[in-house]
Length: 307
Length: 299
Image (cartoon, rainbow over all chains, first blue to last red; front, side, top):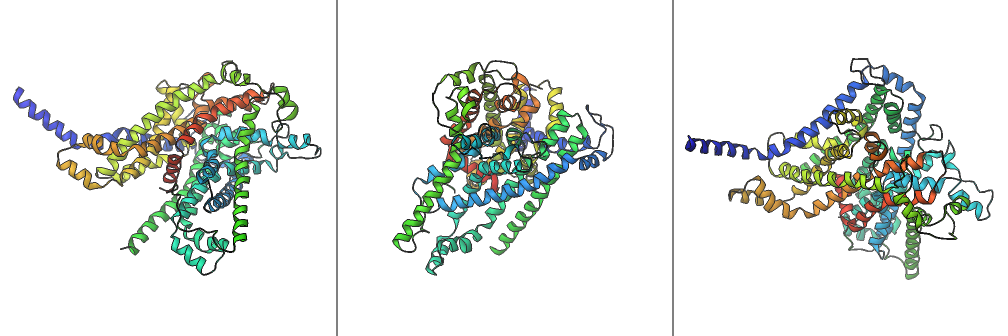
């Protein structure tokens, strides 16, 4: 008995150890499945259920989506997302590219400059938003300083102005993210074949022209990647607005993620909150799915041309 | 890639000497302007942590200080009242630390093993497994808030730091698996094959070949996870309340409330406390921070 059981146990052990790679992945796979698939379907179901303050999983139809798209607050939030997203991505790309080009000029203390431009990315949106709120607020910030300097009529109250507050969010967002664009564009600039640039300079092209016509066009895939990542940030933006303006004044700087939180945890409209969350997922998919298809297509093209 | 500092060409080395000097001057003026724009907000707030409150109220944040004192730092750390409890920001600081350190360790360890299994042990559907795990990177947190709240309630972890550790570990493992898999893919397969012929199994190869190669990617994961989890706000504010909140939620709790007297100097010191650990990590491992950023973004 003892003799025969040993090889059997060994056999089982060996068979099991052949499965180790798969077994190791089981916990993460299970977690990822629950997290990605189950949780998404769950939220999707809540959005079409009869839930209000408490979950009620009986089917309730798509009424909450209709109600959401009829609420003024949500429309404003979505419009804000478009305006904020566009300006935030463009601004970060422009400032980031400019900084990358400046650093690319064989400047002294390159790593010091880079560290300075990138550090906002290490601190939280909460800290960023709180700090800039103090700076932008007319009572404590720039307006106050200008007044005390003797310019008594100076006015700088964008943060409390319904029409201008969103631009404060855009500015702060760019301050936070342009270092990210800089790091990626700089990596791109360094990867450009220097013969290409020499050739352009021998042809007598000025520096600005060399960058515009030769260098930047060759690294356009990097601009696409940065745009996609920043759009993702923009769609998920929440903390920054909470710390900076809390969505106000009024609803002037409300973004979709703030509406989700309010509906779910402040107003007890769980189903409508879930519907808003699904709309955020849809917005994200509209950005990411085309990008994914495009990158796969590009990979294939690359393989074909390189044999 | 980003840390390459050598260059084969000098774009400014065209035109006459005076022209060159002038363009070089413009470059440094612009760099200095932006550097001031990036540094000044935090420096201004830092300066105000030493100023008495009445002075800030009278003159605002942006003015030359008349008198300086260190006591507001102590107040912020130990006795500042946030949401009814007067224990200062230290309580929330340690909450965040207790949440960040375990979640960083767990997610990095899991990511290492997952990345190794996915990149070096081919099996059916491994691409699908990898795809599912990476989808976790992109899923907006809003889609998971209600299910998490329910699950945490069911397992008795709602309003606990342990609950946040769980949430961040599950979410963070997506990132670390992505990082590690892309890193380990570059390890030559022949190395693994040779080891297998010598009779080494899964864990032996992991210990003897992969682990010694992994310090760079471990540093990237640790920095990325630590700063990301330390700075996180939404999960913290939804899944915990009062004394159990992380520091980001505590800052919003005191600075967001419009009522009551403001304690700008103490609040400023609290904000600096919240900013210091990730800044410290960033300055220490900036190179790896950039590497994580680029690989996280492009892949």
